[in-house]
Length: 108
Ligand SMILES: C[S@@+](CC[C@H](N)C(=O)[O-])C[C@H]1O[C@@H](n2cnc3c(N)ncnc32)[C@H](O)[C@@H]1O
Image (cartoon, rainbow, N blue to C red; front, side, top):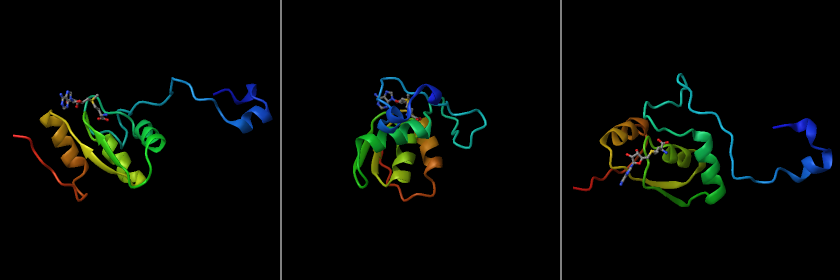
């Protein structure tokens, strides 16, 4: 975040990971916005999925909300299972993945 403070040698080594990430929120007028109140930005989910899985792996999100994990998996070539107990989340995900070959199941 302050490139002027880092010498060439240190810059080559890369940034040490920290426990705080800076990322913009999903903007009110963003094309990414689904309308789901707790939606997380794609960039954050992409980063988590890239760091913790390989292409072709199966990723599960038991609190899927608007399905950002699934959208990131589609982009990154991962398979995914999404779970949510809120019907509004399911409706948002159904819209979001309307053009994808997704298998939907419902626990009675
Ligand atoms: C913070 S939101 C997830 C947001 C998601 N990462 C996104 O980008 O939209 C958490 C979700 O967990 C769901 N949830 C909470 N308790 C649950 C439970 N016991 N079983 C399944 N889903 C649950 C809520 O309905 C909510 O959609």
